[in-house]
Length: 288
Ligand code: HPA
Image 1: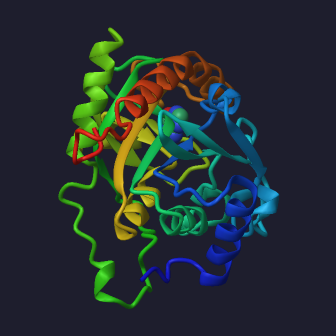
Image 2: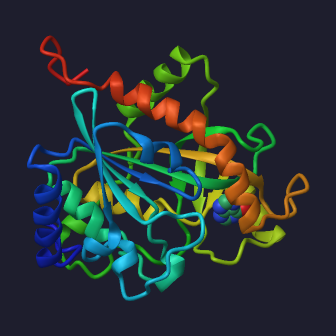
């Protein structure tokens, strides 16, 4: 059903990933944002594939550029009876203007069997209760950006309901993992700005007035495509700064990378705990 991406690219990636990692189905796909991937690259029982070997993945796209702070590798890891496809680094709409720039990886994971998509990002905050480096569960989003990755699909399936875009069961289980780890997991609404320039103070005031808690340059198109592909979505932000002009915020990319590293270890522990408690068990029918 997915014409989001060229089927021949999806088939090539499925072949390549199976050739390197075997044909066990992927259960969970993870996308790790700026500065958040380091710990995941050390996972035992994992193999690493350069994006350059995966057609349509970010580094092999015509745009080329990987942005500093983004690694450009896919890790396939077996963890607690699950098979994870972990993207260290994503493509952003701000690189090419293409809202489907993550379509090939996401559609390939869906084709390989993934049922959950766990998205992470570094984000600005417009809520003084969410200072850097708080980890925040995204409950919903606001997209007034214009581009939507489903524009032009020409099928009724493009009218994807977004009433519960962020899966409530995943959210509940992430909160339970945070409690078990004695970690505070805040919740918030994420507003997407295209970037790459940061927002103006007036735009930040608007975001706050519209009900946003977080602002960022990624994730939202991935959520929309993930829902189109039938994936259940969980999403987490690490707050790296306050928005421009808000509580002294004056964001720049160096700060994003530095603060993301501070929140990254909490994010890693949280996701690993969540995944371990998602492991299939013979006595549970929903896999938990
Ligand atoms: N604005 C947009 N994206 C971001 C920010 C921000 O302040 N911080 C990290 N990503």
